[in-house]
Length: 381
Length: 236
Image 1: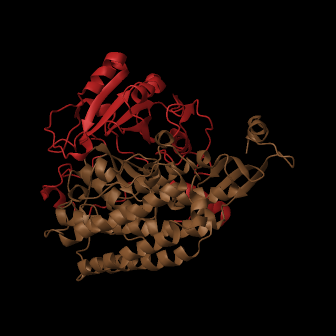
Image 2: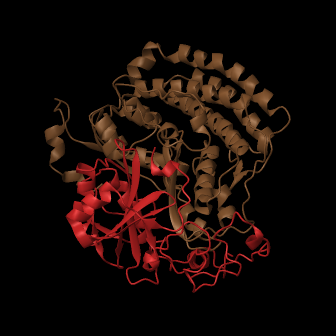
Image 3: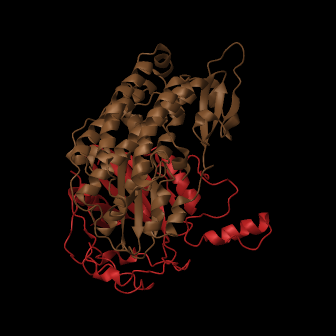
């Protein structure tokens, strides 16, 4: 930390009769509540946070450099390793971006399969978030419940493409695999199974006094701050901005479905919890509509075996579980991308941490890291 | 609905303008692709850009010609207003695959972005990034991807700078640019003037070089590490 002796902290700190000296401590990188290898340097006055600095990059693998040394097809599995709890979303964004660059469109059947799998993945991601977030705050039971139910989603993925987490479910131009026999029944059975489970989570937490006390008013972020900091996803919506890329700039087959954008008003940790819970229900609604009417037809568009997109550049983004996930791809007409830039939602959202925890307590930092729903694989890439 | 969501197939109106901006394929690393299915490619109608021959490394404009989409001039009220204000400071404004992009002079940078935010409601800075073209005199494209909630519209603002040239930071305009610019500095070595805390973000402080430059070879880096730490010749 460089600003150890900067003058501002003594003015800002509430002077106590014990000690008003600041203390600098490290949280992470090996700390279970940082959800990976995030290191936060905290400047404290007693229990009160005066400022933070995030140190990231522990999981940096140079995904963007790797992309420049692979063909478009070869790079496809790598994107799953960024946000590894929502690998399907990553793949969808990348495949759609390259399709745009190639000027091809996935067939309707592929789009429906994509929507179903992506929404299942959103559910899985939110379940993992809920379990770990609640665990951080002190509620252990939700973790067992959400992991139990998330397992059902992973089983569907496994049956569909053989992988549970880094699925690589989609290909540029459509899907690699036709749905397996009984896919629709499995998904329908899952919908019936999971709806009461979400009620169960809400029963455990929504009116739980400890949960409410720990989350209400914690980590406040106003709508204006969200815009200025580029924060997207459920965090933005909990601050009252009704913005979802699935509605604002529909991709895949999202324009065919009827669903709401849940929003909050207070922009605190509790509202973000409520928004994500409602989003899970909306995802179920989308899957329910999609699974009954998957159109017939091919699952792959006609794409060349050797992909050489014309010279040009494209930016395409999707609403990943964490926020806007964008791919900026520059093609030089060869088989390898000239440049791939990933705009990761977790990375940009994490920037808001400092503003959200200033003036709050150390224990709230844990709650705020949880509520931002970051995945370090995506922050560091 | 914004331009992004349409699937436009613009007629090839032949605007051959941004040839300066078209990258020559970098000859830094040999392309390992052997093109196993090359004869199949030209027969396929869905591959407008696929050239029948192998990618000739020094004919950059040729492959995109036949039927593929071509960047068109971007005419809109926004461009007209800005052009009135900045004249030739806006080098070009074009649309490619329904996405709008403006290339502006680097000297305009903080002010132009400020105007976009304050007057044109581009209040969300989606991304700041860069692309390296080592063959060009102005080696770097610095790109801001902006979005307006009110207009539901996305634009890219691009400026070209030489190696070592300094761009003005956009952090005073959008605080979101803070880490994004740090990442550009980390990966490309582009300095942003007025950035509150310009230092490496993803790589360790003592890292040598800037990996996303085209002349930064991954193999050399790996070999060096292996030689020093494992005492063997090559890790590959």
